[in-house]
Amino acid sequence: MTRDLLGRPQHKYALIDCNSFYASCEIVFRPDLEDKPVVVLSNNDGCVIAGNKKAKALGFKMGTPFFKMKSVMQKQEVAVFSSNYALYASLSQRIMALLRQYGSAIEVYSIDEAFLDLTNTEETTGIGTLIRENIKKQTGVPVAVGIGSTKTLAKLANHIAKKDPNFPGVCELRSYQEDIKYIAHWPIDELWGIGRQHCKSLQEHNVFTIGSFMELPEAYIKKKWHAPVWRIYKELQGVRCHSFKERPPAKQGIGTARTFAQPINDWYKLKEIMCGFVASVTEKLRKQHSLTQQISVFVMTDKHREQNHYYASEKITLDVPTDDTAILIKIMTVLLKKVFKAKHNYKKAGVHLMKITPNQSFQQTLNNVHDSNKVEKKFHLLGTLDRINRKYGKNTLVFASQRLSARQPFDMKQENKSQKFTTNINEIAFVR
Ligand SMILES: [Mg+2]
View 1 (cartoon, helix red, strand yellow):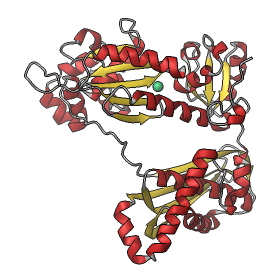
View 2 (cartoon, rainbow, N blue to C red; view 1 turned 180 degrees about the horizontal axis):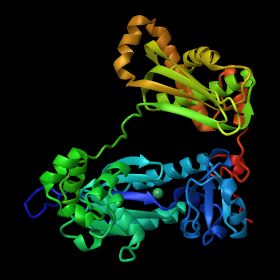
View 3 (tube, rainbow, N blue to C red; view 1 turned 180 degrees about the vertical axis):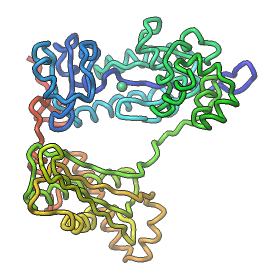
View 4 (cartoon, protein in one colour; view 1 turned 120 degrees about the vertical axis):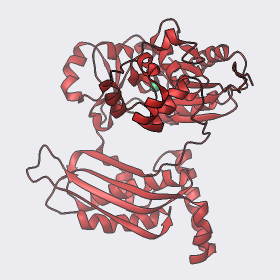
């Protein structure tokens, strides 16, 4: 391990972030679009959620409703895609698997971002360049690599690698003091952990750039903005405050909600869709080895169209935590009955699981209150269900109560969806 001037051990972290990830995934299978503006829309083709550099340069802001920009986009020949999460997830997995080879540990931070531990690596900038080249070569997705002795510096270095032409795609920072000329001028909100609230409060104290932030006395920062902001200050000096978490912490709430392309007023149809939601959230629950002890449902009508806007939600806390889809479908149905009023047309609905705990801690309790043989059998059954659906595609095996929604997934409006090039054998790309 290398050491700093005071003899303290120096960590080295890399933050690898894919450039315009969703748009880049689409371009992988449409190389003719490489130099064209490309955008990706949210579910139901509602809003623009991602765009490549070219699209951003034309001024298309993320989050804007698609219908407002449709004609302008047509004129500017912007390639528009409905979101294809199966494709993005599969490319993300490939990228993460490749990244694992370069560091001693990986912390997958989001679908298109990961921290790598390069502490025992010499020549880190060289490795950064290699990572960048190989990910592009092997997946087609462009990435930027930021390296630093703390996570905050690695994040900032990644930003600089994307924006500063002095560092095309790879940037390594040692500390604020040593790299002040590349860091000081960036606006304060480029710092990892500075959210809108902190940013506003810092700006009120005339702190607009990272340079002016670092000029503040440490004690003043600690008193005024407390530990989270003080940690950013220390991390920029190269003092490690954020540890490396190989496994992302389990989610504390798991939910799914959808806006329907066509409002629904049929009880059976809505119920079946909601059963599909329960199946999907419980699968996520089992994937992170957790149990839930609280489930809530909500339904709502279209705020903009219906005169008597209706929103209702219900929740229930269970005696025993569970990850069992069948049990939660039953409970969800009871809750849905309470909120469902036949006279309304429902535009949006969702299911949320809360009070989530690791399953090991409850295995004991479960074995005490239930027949342990039965618990064991259920565990294997649900595990098999998940494996089949992972292998052969979502909804290959479904619960009887979700059969309709499984076949007609909430009539999602997706007019411009690309193929599942990487996850469905019937949709692979052909080379002519
Ligand atoms: Mg990204």
